[in-house]
Amino acid sequence: MKPYRVKKLTRSIHSSLEVIRKGTRGHVGNGKTIHIWEDKWLHTPTTYKAISPPRCIDDFPMVFALIDQDTKRWKAGLVRETLLPFEANTILNIPLSYSFSDDKLIWLRNKRGEFSVRSAYYVALPLVVTNNEGES
Image (tube, rainbow, N blue to C red; front, side, top):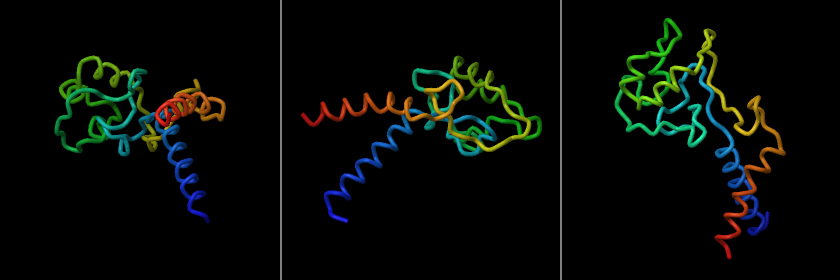
């Protein structure tokens, strides 16, 4: 493959990953793959991330540590002492499944959390405009 095509392909893949990062958030199953402070997983549309100062907890720093493995319920005390009050309330209102399924990514731009090319276009559009402004 010619160098200019490799560069274009690499740029295209990078842009696609950025669209996916911007358009998704974690959906809590067992909490083993969602980082409390780095991943988007909260039901707060401004950032979808916890903004509380990070604290050290047993299974730090995964959401798994905030869930009681026996009862499949949030460890309310730990959630309240680890996160800001509004974040704690948001977390305690996230329903947990008794099946304790794996965490998954959901698409933010669709009510059912499902990806569509149309919604991805609207996520990508501001990124393209920003990139084009930076090149001028």
